Length: 279
Ligand code: ZN
Image (cartoon, rainbow, N blue to C red; front, side):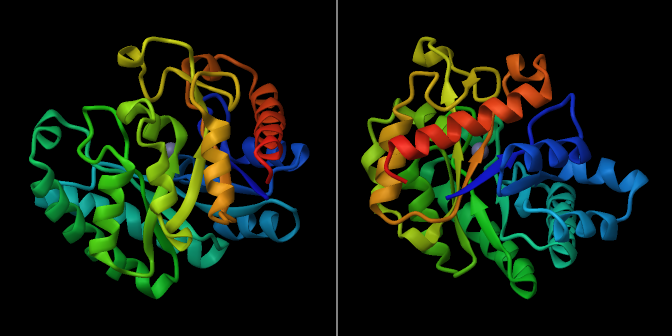
């Protein structure tokens, strides 16, 4: 079991997250690129490497490159620049994955599934080429909300199958996959080859009507909400999932909480959920 913390605390910092995650037992961290940039304003990357070399916690990966579809040339240049920034960080620090996220605009969401498929395959192949020399994997993350252009497990799987590169797989986020159709398609998760499951983002959804759920605001600790997280964990266990389980909270109530409380409670609830699912 590799319990990971996906940095989502706006009232914390990379330095603080690391100290607290080490204290409460996390095995790894998905480093948020904006927080890494903040950290490097006053520290060197060698200092960060030294921290990882001398502590239990390790970098799992980097989070996240957003809006990768249907970019203008300038937008695509910015995507590639941030992507290579993460690649270069991984060269010093280590880490296995970079999360990339489909585009969230009305125009992208209104494209046909075939247009989204073709664009996604093309951009992921280009990112795959960039990642190749760094030996780091791309985790493409479907987000179920209707504003996003790649919304389901099946759609994400079709795309990465067509990309057909060893370094391109999926990030599976319980909330984001639930947001597609309330997990009527939960069994599709078992169709993903284990080696294509790059990272599992664990979370839950507050008890609200389905159509009101917002991907950022309404997250809850795993087990505290309405998503069948345990069932998802059981499916992952049944296919032999052995990569990181990364707690991703984001919600407004999280931002108003004490970071230490969130990191401690989040670890305990994540671990309890995994144990209950037989991990
Ligand atoms: Zn996620």
